[in-house]
Amino acid sequence: MTEREEFDVLFLGGGPAGYVGALYAAKLGLRVAVVERDRLGGTCLHRGCIPTKALLQTAALYRAIREAGPRAGVTADGVRFDAAAAHRAKGEAVLRLEQGIQHLFKRARIEVFRGTGRLLGPSIFAPAGAVGVRGEGGEDVVLTPKAVVIATGSRPKTLPGLPPDGRRIVTSDEALTLEEVPRSAVIVGGGAIGVEWASLWRDLGAAVTVVEAAETLLPGEDAAIGRELARQFKKRGIRVLTGATVDVDGTESLPDGVRVRVRPVHGAGDGNVLAADVVLVAVGRAPNVEDLGLEAAGVRLENGFIATGPHYETTAPSLYAAGDVIGPPMLAHYAQAVARRVIDHLAGRGGGRLDPRLVPRAVYGFPEVAAVGLTEAAARAEGRDVAVGTFPFRGIGKAVIEGEVDGFVKIVADRSTRDVLGVHIIGPRATELIGEGALALLMEAAVDELGEAIRPHPTLSEALLEAALAVDGLAIHA
Image 1 (tube, rainbow, N blue to C red):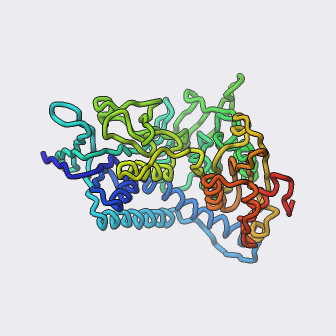
Image 2 (cartoon, rainbow, N blue to C red; image 1 turned 90 degrees about the vertical axis):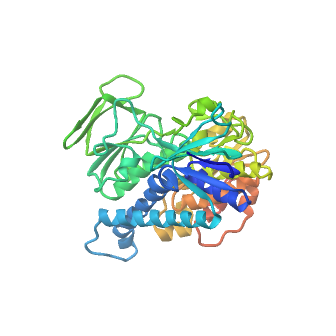
Image 3 (cartoon, rainbow, N blue to C red; image 1 turned 180 degrees about the horizontal axis):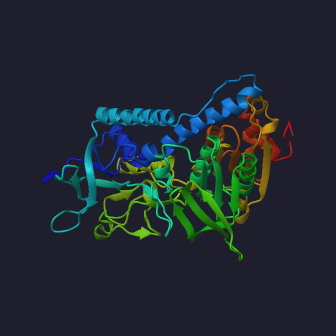
């Protein structure tokens, strides 16, 4: 057994929190190590953000050639989707980014310990903060850094009685490995993951049904966004069943598919029986907090997540946590930002907790959805003097040019203070446009300032200007 004590900070996990935190720490002159049992980049790079968006990009291109092309005078004969080629392109994107991380680690002299890490101390055998690593070859290493950041990520949740088999019943992990697009799919869960897969499979020709227990899709977002998304999904031929749940006892996996019984959440009735090639379970994610030695180390959990303080410190000395293990929002960019805050604290540069309201949320289906800040309902629940400005993309020249006129920008503001409280977008390039909203909230911009900032014409960003003006009924093209 080897013992090492020279590191200032050790990250348990090399996903978005771990690898970004490690690189940031190295730039600040700290001696850094990372323990990773799989591949650098974590779920985001290998089973989440990047591969799913690569496939969504392929699907968007396929849709554009078939639908937008003829409208613009461009026709192509014999257009088809090649699943094998799409998966190769996805794999190449993932590999290129993984190699980029490896190069950055090498240049920053960050040491990576391949294997499974576990907190050992405090005990007579190891001090507080010690980490044992069981290497891939069975060798053991004990690391005693000055600080440990737990960044072990999360995994897809499953439903009791509906275990994934990797073929007929799948989570988002297994969905990425399917060699062919299913002819039909039932997606359990209308959150971000379910919505993206519904859009992807529909673009590639599948018959899709989305089952969501809440009354709208994307139940955490503004109700107007959920309603508009359902409208556009139905327009595209995606069946949307809200206020409904899957009866696990009524689900049967067969050699040629799956039969699923869907019942209303409220009220009686036998519900509907749906037949599909595949059932995708997309009901959220669970933190990876098992088998880490947390209890023995004195790390407390709250609602299954690691409890953290003002600087993301745990209840154990010298132990911190970042990423999905600390709870919502379970987003890669939030994980990265928290990891940097932890390192700032360890390096004596301040740090402190982030305001979750400043974290943008993005859904990359068709249409795209993005938001930051408070929904209208949340703002009213806080007792704010709410004013709302909404502007449709069909009034924006660039949207008309691109042939994507469905959707809108909605700004929630405080009528009295003029503060921007929330920005909500559904439509073309929403996930790119939301950065402006995130900056506005960070800088505590007034809604008048959003309306005064000049945007180039023609651009989709003009929708933000118009929505800001609409708060006072002054939108130009309405």
